[in-house]
Each structure stands twice: as C-alpha cells, then as structure tokens.
Image 1 (tube, rainbow, N blue to C red):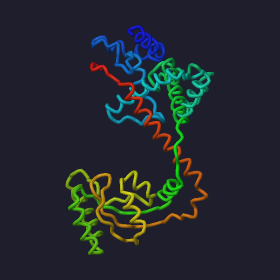
Image 2: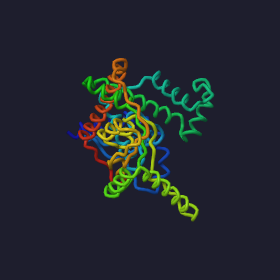
Image 3: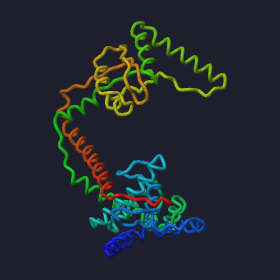
Image 4: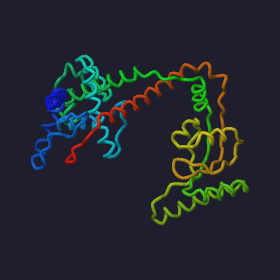
Length: 334
C-alpha cells in the first residue's frame, strides 16, 4: 500500500513540477528564514508539493477564469488555490493535456486582451520584456500558467458536455417574463421592520409624505456634510428602469413582490418587504409589461440560456462533490 501511495505522489509531482519550478525559485530566498515546508497538504491521500501550491496561487492571483470567481477574502483565495490543484489532478487522472497549438492560442488571446503591439512569436525580446514587466515573471512561468489554464478549461468543458439538464416550457416562459417585465421603483431602506411598517402606513395615508421625508433627509445630509461629517448615503434609492430579474437577483426582492408591483398603478406604495439589507418600502414609478405573444420567437434563446445556466450549476455541484471525495487536508504551517 505504501508503494502505491508513493507512486501517486510521484505522478502528481511529475505532472506539476515543470509548472512550479519558477515559483519555487521566487520563494527560496523568502523561506530561508522561515519554516521549511515541502508539502502543502494532501487530497485523495496524495501529498501536494509546496511548489505546486505556489504555482496554483500564482495562477489565481494573476488570472480570472470561467470556473472560479474572483476571490475577495483570504479564505476565498485559499479555496480557489485548492480548487486549481484539485482540478489539475482530476485532469491528470482523465489524461487531459494541452497541445502546443492550444497553449500558443491561449498566449495570443491573453496578449491580445492586453492590446500589445508586438507579435510575440516573432519578437521574443518584446515578449519577454512584457511578461517580466507586466507579470513580474519569466516567460517559462507564464507559459506554464497558460498550459495550466488550457488544461483546466478543457476539463471544465468536458464536464459541462457531460451534463444534459431537463428544461420545461414553463421555465423558459418564466425566464422570458422575468426579463421582459420592466419596472422602475423608488425605495426607502430600513434596518427594522417596525420602522418600515410605520413609514408605509404614513405614506399610504398621506400622498405628500414620501416626498416630504425625502426632502427632509436630503437637507439633513447636506447640513451634516457642511458641519464636517462624512456624507452618508440617502435611504431613498432608485435601482433604475430594470427587468424584474435584476430586482430579484441584485436587490434580493422576492418574486411575489415584484410581480405584485408590476400590476399596480403608477405612484402606488408597496408594503415592507425584505431586500438585500433590511427592509424596503416601495413607490412604483414606471411599468412596462412583457407581451407573452412575443415569447415563441424567443423560445430557443431562453431554452439555451437556461441550459447553460443549469450546466454551470451542475459543474458547481460536481466540483463540490469532488472536494468532498478528495478529503482535502491542509498543512497548518502554511
């Protein structure tokens, strides 16, 4: 059993060693005065060399991908690094490899996105200089990063291709309605439901109350700013003339609430409802209702949109299952 474990380690080390050499060199001086760490952790019972971990960290730090969001906290960054390592190992198990043509295409795409003025294949000097000055890395590391990204992109696509979600006519129609029903509202945000309820009752009974309170708050904010206080944000906000889907996804309004408001008259006041933070009371400003008879011409578009969304959701479930199966154990000294 010990021999099998050693061979797994050897395969993983061979797989990623060329990718980690440059990263390892960059950390040697830094680690001379720190604890010598050779293994970052393990998954599937396989030790992960520290050089591989540093390489994956360099990828996450430098590039955005379609299979992982931009990490905003240290915890999210650490999770992304281990996802890159895990996906790289899974690609190895599936014998997914990039060829030179794919790597070169990725390099070209990356350089084109940065609007470089040189042909990297013909002007190696300019290419090396750009990589050094932009990424603070040698071209060897950059091209290894490109190879890694191509490999995971191929794995990502293979998993997506294996997922065939079921889609109903009802789902497609509802998505159409969510996007084509358009609503403009003004809302006032409260932390406490009781305060929101009191405001709603007053606004409902007094047509001028809403504008009076908005003007009063505006004057208070201006006075505070004149006295040297930091200018606070108004409690009254307008998301814009937007699709119901935007209000539901970005402002976290319940579906029932937005569909109630789309049927109300202009100027109507809608009662306290949970939003992204606390509670909102709403005034309807403008409405454009979707026309169901336009849906047949857009049916295929919405079927494809839902299909891709469900495939991505399926990939995320697959990745979560892979994490659980891998039983990741991290070196506490990192």
